[in-house]
Image 1 (cartoon, each protein chain N blue to C red):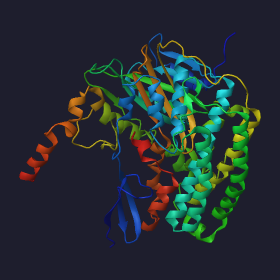
Image 2: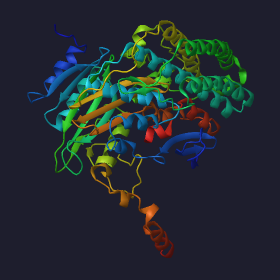
Image 3: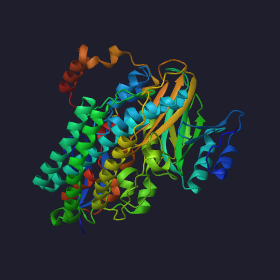
Image 4: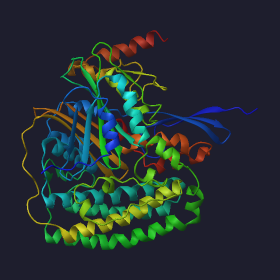
Length: 178
Length: 360
């Protein structure tokens, strides 16, 4: 017996057109029967079109997840956009270019994408083109962008606690107040 | 010509003891523009989650927040169950809902108490906290803890209740409910409370949709948004309750959503106690493959969303979550437009903000 998975047929059909690979689309349900649809878009450029489709259907952006495909310093990154419409979740995933990870901003379409995009800029070093407000969200300007791409050894992370580095920096700043 | 000044507010003690920094552009006593800076308690919890195994992450996620701690371990466990294909036993579904609703009652009462505190209505603050204390006693008796209940685990729940404990819970609810009913009337009719809350901190419906706000903030602006109804999980499909929606769009509307919801929660817990199925409370673990899944639930502050990627090991390759406050902060810019400086703390409290949740 085939299981029925809920969803907006129009949205599913339109988003499917943006997927080029054979295994790019799958549908699933959880044990309570709630539906999840997953779409892997051909290129990050198609994201704007995908977001427009969901905007027209009056979906709500629930979350954006950036992640590294392989463990630690590997460059292959992906971003997954999670949308909600009538209790059904639509996920759009884009694979980024390893050399120059860039996605178009969807903040013009979904105002609440602003924080999510700023967060992935600072944590994963992803460029978001057309982001209307590309300020830091949580991290200080002093920290390099893309901190989650790096494996920071515990000894470095705890410099302030177990070496004299931090103290020396304070003394230096005190001697040369800029 | 009018001149404006920039006024710093925070980072500590804006509404609660959590740090967020407001840059207010004020024109006399009137706020013209709000900008906020956060990140003071950013702990890198998502990076920590990818260094721990799935079981340890139940404990970690429960510590994202204190007031909705249970919602985090709950939703995280659901995400893991979705990715592994686990179906939890019926008794666990009910016990999860009981824990979640007890937390919701305590959380909503805490927020409304703080509102009274900011207004300067100290006796009401003390009274609401006293009533909430009974819920804290209930938590301590049933779970052994007052804040982090440690009720959830992957595949079910870690606690069980016998008939005596269920009877105790029922009696406790009988004691608390009439008092909450009385408190609800005070918030709905007291002139001092109404003068500071009605028509203030307005978030029009269109802005609520545009900013994608969730929880009581959305429902106070007329949006029918409740994950428990929209995509029912655990025992919510089996129980009857109303989604509380208010049209006022102001602080008062959000407060009333919370107060009515507390009474709905009493009814949900009672239904769960009455229908509590027997049997196991956990399902066995299954093999971990490379897969991805998400899960969401309705925490006291709104929708919590979890995404997990597994790579065949017991350590997730990515765990990401989005808390309700994350969506609600930007709404403050709309709510505070042209408000009085004196109302900033009150408006901030009306979104029931959680900074440690937001920043993780």
